[in-house]
Amino acid sequence: MEPPDSYVKKLIASLKHEDPTIRRRSAWLLGKLQVKAAVFPLLQCLQDNDDDPYILADTARALGEIGDARATAQLVSLLHGSFLPARLAAAEALGKLGGDQAREALTSALADRNQVVRQAAGEALHELDFRKSILEAAGKRIID
Image (cartoon, rainbow, N blue to C red; front, side, top):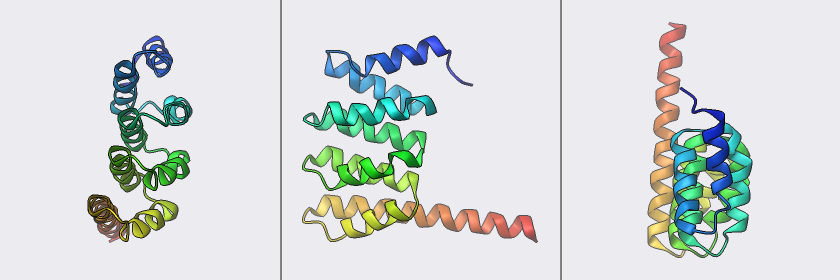
């Protein structure tokens, strides 16, 4: 069930609130609600908050929850950024989004200088492969 438009508009407007905690919570809620209309405001939130690792992380997770491939390029950039929480969230989100560009970025992150990033990339790739296997198996059952 979609939330009312007025609620979504308030959440999107809150991405620009002066209080960073409110921006983080708004991003998180938009992701949990999987609001497709929030993709571009969330991408803008990544740009506007490039100095806050926690807003970046919550926004990346929200984009992963929404599952819109238009977020892939910015998430790839975030994966190679400097803030560890944001990098880990970007890996998780890319694992949910899938696609060739996400897979390539996660594969390259397996050689990252940071062990935790390498582990997150491996887990995201595992998730991608697991979902792909399930979809293939379900497709075979439908065809059979």
